Amino acid sequence: MMLALAQLGKLIEKAGFREDQPRVPGGSGAGSGQWMYVEGYAQGRPPGMGDNGGPSLDPPEPPKDPPKDKISKTQAAKALAKEIARQTLRRAGPVGAVFMAIEAAHWLYSERHSIRSYQDEPKSLAELQQNAGQSRAGYENHHIVEQGAAESERFPRSMIDGIDNVVSVPKYKHHEITAWYSKPNQSFGMQSPRAYLRGRDWSEHVRVGHDAMRQTGVLK
Image (tube, rainbow, N blue to C red; front, side, top):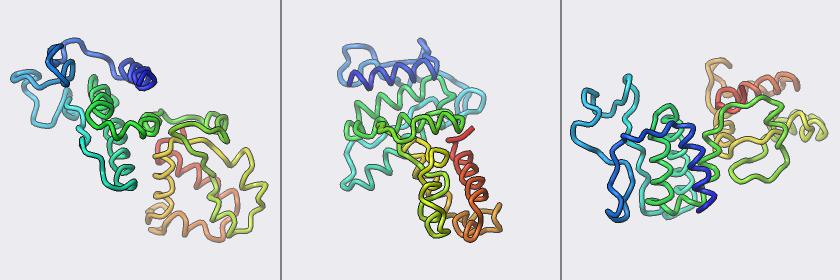
């Protein structure tokens, strides 16, 4: 819990804490200190909208009951991570969302590292390569040139596992990169990137791999 609070502190600094945000008074039970709705607060905004036409200041509310299977749990955690990312520019949203993830939906606590890493800003290639091979909660190693495709093209294993081809990326972003490769893409004549790359040389695989990381917000 102390680790979670330290991570929360970082989000507070990033999001911009706002003292006048309405909150439940202390000593009011389980909801003490949480953001609350007050009639007339932030008037003049359409339902669901925030300052400057942005999204509502209400943080996402994860379900309190855990899903019955691991896949559903991961999908729920991903949805929360994406919602927090969408609210990054808001003043209180990310903080409220993380509070609710820890307090209201304690079953998501095991996914806190992956939810947090999803909020990472895009990094340079050198930064992504720096942590490759290390075991870090919320991160996974990613081969820029996909291993399966590289093996099918008979690229040498020394290139596939080379330091230039392995990076450390947020776990959920890694899943998004994998999904990106399998979807039809207008840039490749409505082929999936994976289909487009069949028969291509190593440099083209690398170029598309970098594009995949940029499209998913991993690479600058």
